[in-house]
Amino acid sequence: MTPDLSVSRTISASPAAVYAAVTDITRMGEWSPECYKAEWNEGFDKAELGAIFTGHNRNGDNEWSIEATIVELVNNERFFFDCMVRDFVFAKWGYVIESTDDGCVVTEHWQDLRPESSLERSAQISGVADRKSHNRAGMEKTLERIASAVE
Image (cartoon, rainbow, N blue to C red; front, side, top):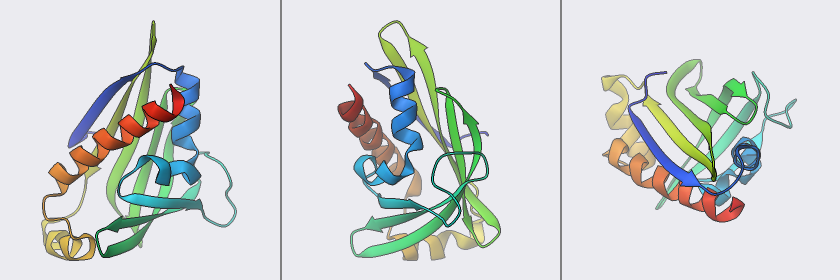
């Protein structure tokens, strides 16, 4: 993955605690300012390669849901998923957790794969014209909330 945006934060908690928090997608609404709820799709109930979940998002009066598939999972180190519309991957998201003497550094990554032709429609659906700036602020808030929960 070649991220378009990465945001890091030092967290005073074990990599295992952070990994458990971010891979429990049912808690995503606690962390993300945009994804207010996530749930496992039928046949899945935990983070595993190929597991599919749906994230429910909100920005002001705009609401939309996105299906995601877990594509990389390394215990206490990495959690990545692809966001899809039909069979098209339009974004990749993930977390890298690196152990430190006092806890860990967590980096959230986002890669935008939307074609130019879909940007206007995407902005209409989400109410977000500047997705990169919006995501940076959201990622900073997400990592702050994760830190508050696990420290």
